[in-house]
Length: 124
Image 1 (spheres, rainbow, N blue to C red):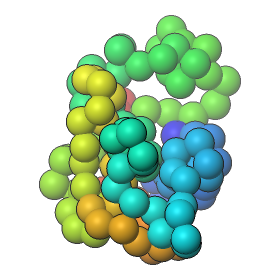
Image 2 (spheres, rainbow, N blue to C red):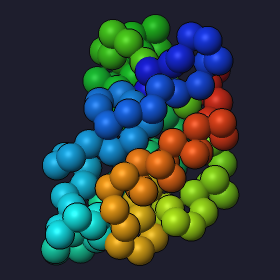
Image 3 (tube, one colour):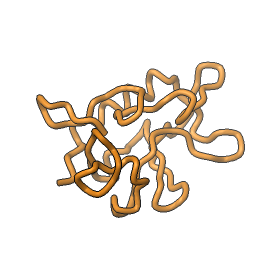
Image 4 (cartoon, rainbow, N blue to C red):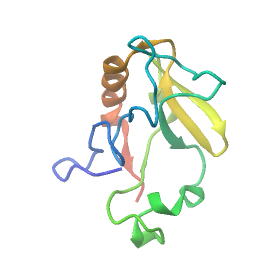
């Protein structure tokens, strides 16, 4: 994720490398609501790793750590930060998704994700 230089916390937003979700890549609202699961059962929300960052796609890992990302850093947080209205769902270990616990408006989901910002810390 991108780092805010002023406070060293993640930058909030709805784009790549930001603390939030991208439409329609991460979520696909239906009738104005983001549901926990897409048709077919895949979780909707922001991707997170529940294991060692070394298992991440190299395009998301900073160059200084051996990846190919030209910007951004690796952040970590505790699982407990993902409390209602958010839910942490295992998808394909080590990949997990943080999305809505119940159907909710996209704006509400983005606000809930942004509220976790103070709980994130730089990995190194």
